[in-house]
Every structure is written in structure tokens, then in C-alpha cells.
Image 1 (cartoon, rainbow, N blue to C red):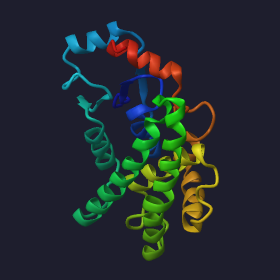
Image 2 (spheres, helix red, strand yellow):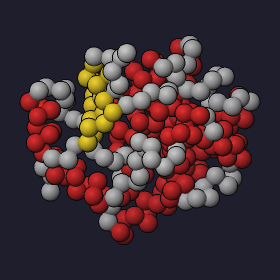
Image 3 (cartoon, rainbow, N blue to C red):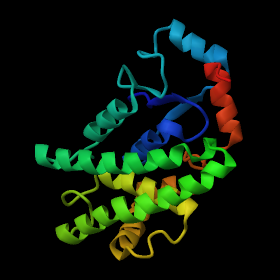
Length: 223
């Protein structure tokens, strides 16, 4: 029996959360080692586990993968979540990049000063409702399928449901003008593996907080 993938990161979302989502959607059990101290990080560096001196890092199939996009590509391809043709992969890449751009605005929100948070929140909602969600609504309408690409679940779907839920944490009614995305959210949330991941007690992480930020600063020796 193959060993479970092992994820090295903080006990929080950050850049590893999409990896957790994709593994969970694929039905893959995984282990996690949470970085809490500078010593843990230095040991990984000393053992040359971190190619570019960065996390996330995932041990899988005898590899030590770094760089989030490379990790996600590998998991998606390995578990048949990366389309059937080169054209489908190109579409998946485009849709994933769009959601990553949107999620990037949310990922930094907790780090901001109070006066900056309101401005960033308005930007998140504006970008979601004016730039990104209209695209995915049209894709679903034009394809007349339950999925963004082709006729089966792909990485693009997993990334989008993750992004939708992240935006809804900031603005619960953000999908009010997007009926097809509302239906998409319900379908994706009912996929057995995703439904399990959304249950309390799963390895899904809560939104980042001051503890998450303090841990990252301690590990990386930042002020």
C-alpha cells in the first residue's frame, strides 16, 4: 500500500489549502506536519527538503514537491482531474488562474491594517461580482454542463468552489446575481468527497488569524 502524501506547512490555510482541497476532492487521505518553530524549518533546509527554501512542501510518490502550482498540477494529473485533452487542460489552467487571482486578494486580507481592510473587502466583492464570477456564470451557461470543463469533475471545479466559499465568508450574499453559480455550489458541495471535507472535524482549515500570522513570522524569523 502506497504511503499517504505528507504535507509540510503551518496549521492554517495559506498556500497549502488548495492542495488540501484537491487531495480531499480526489478522495486521497493525507498526513500533515505543522511547522511551529524555527528549528523545524531549519531542519528541513539542512536536509535539503525545500528546493527553494520555501513551503508548502508535499512528500508524495517518492517526490518532495515544492511550488504550489507544481504540486497542484501533479495531483490533478495523477487523479484524473486535469481534463482529457490538451485543449481541456488549457481551459482548466485559465479558470484556475482566475480563481487564484481572486483568492490572492482574500489571502492577504487578514494581514492588513484595520483601515485597509474595508478597502480590500470592497475590492474583493467588486472583483468577484464584476470580473470573475460573471465569467464562470457564462461558462456554465454556454457549456450546458454541470462542470466548468467537459463532463466530469476537474481541478477547475474544485478551485472554484473553494474560492466561492472564501468570498462568501466575507460577503454571504455574493452569489445573489449568479443563479448558475448557486446551483454549481450546491452540486459541488454534494460531491461525496467534497461533502466530507466540508464537515466539521475534517482537515479543512479555518480562515487565518493572528495566531497563524505569528507562527509564520516565528518560523521565518520575520518581524
